[in-house]
Length: 118
Image 1 (cartoon, helix red, strand yellow):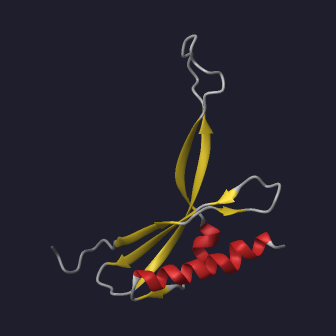
Image 2 (spheres, helix red, strand yellow; image 1 turned 180 degrees about the horizontal axis):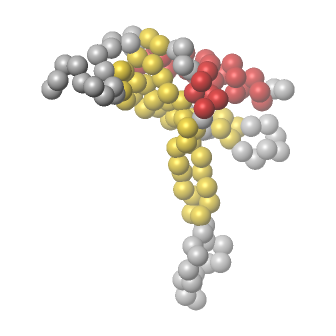
């Protein structure tokens, strides 16, 4: 492989899905984050990319016959970019996935969880 490729790329070293963070009473929602630990080509330093996991209810648009439930719905989860939270993690870096993960979790606690108490 060419030692100096013209295209830059990142390797995803680890992926972590955090447990849902419940929002204040009455919101009936939770925050679900995915943390991707990345290494740029030729670098030893790791960094993080933060994404949000969203769940949507889908229901069929076709008739399923007499046995089909009118309330049939299915959860579908997608991963979306969260520009605000990802921007907060841009300065985080480290030599190990564990150290980067801990820094990102602290940043989430500082921002997302502090918003719950307001």
